[in-house]
Length: 533
Ligand code: SF4
Image 1 (cartoon, rainbow, N blue to C red):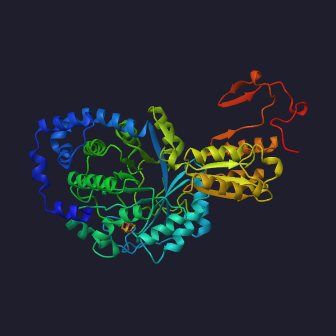
Image 2: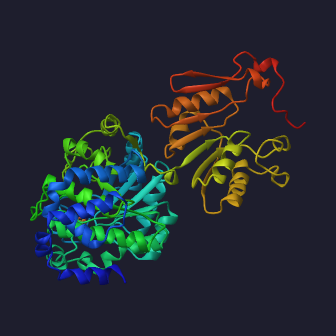
């Protein structure tokens, strides 16, 4: 059964009567089963969202905390939204970007997008969400593809929140580097949907409802859905969104599904929220979703206040936006304008949000916190780099970026991951082919170039970790220094000074761990391992 059919079946359901008829004993029964990790049914989600469950928030929170730690660890992913265009052909009555709202519209040029991306990457963010108004004419597929290509230079995970498209278009965007899609149904109640979307392509409820499935079919790694709280009845909207997430999780098992909990905030030229979601209901919704769908990610944006977001950390959240600007070019290009889609309430910097997460006993991750999202840069494809790359491919890492200027030489073959038929060919090309022979679906980007100090930071700006496998001691130092401001972790290795393994020890200074015998001078030692003549 499609989710459209399922959704239709619930459109005439009397949610209010159902919610009000649920007794406290039913809530306790659901909690007993949730605590024992028994799968919950839709009826149980109704129970957890009912007024009766409001007296059970503490036990719900304890179960939610355990389930979240079990499935996500104590990590909170960080991302930043970047608005690149506010042109829109829709008439959503609740949004400041709607086509009727008169203000000077902006679409960033590709150079301006690069400037914004660089500014955001400089904050340490590695997961970007690209947003536009919905205007296929002003922000066509070709423009979005170019945008994605730019973003791949800076970010390891690229999500889109743009107009809904056909599966074939999503495939092209995936080729260009996008891996995730956010699409909010906004309101699952069809009658309200038609009222708040009176004109424009978005008035097609069903096409929008199927959008996450088209993205999944195109190979997107992740989809993020949700209602906009403020349009329909909060509890019934939370129920439908929970059902939708469960449906996607079951029908697209290879895709990471997440839910967002956005509450309407004020914006110029938009209606005020009709159905306010109180803080208590917000927490209840978050907990109910976590208990009903334990493996689904939950995203909270900077629409919520700093103090409120601080309190949500242990309750099941998995992703926060941070340092957000919600106007086009708001990070660097037009930082002095104020034509926001919605007002940011938590205006803290990425560093401040990360510090708050650490203070709460969790680890902030610039991405989702999953290894499957990481992009690892490898500087130098020789004895260290080629072998590290080989082991990373064997371990199933999905995304490597190889940088080296050299060609394969006969003297490399006894210790580097190349074969004799590759002698004379660029190392990065040969290594890419060898890695794909191990792990055919991994993504391997290459750059055949000698690294220079002035460009190192830019070249590796989209990487979560960089492996330093360079020969030249000066270049090793330059790479570590170049990546220090962005706090990109560098794993550095050098030839061991001394080949008597019994004398090798580890010396630690701060977060730097050095391995060696700390006495042998390489100038007086034989090469180790030996090179071929
Ligand atoms: S919510 Fe999206 S589609 Fe609707 S007016 Fe705003 S930008 Fe356009």
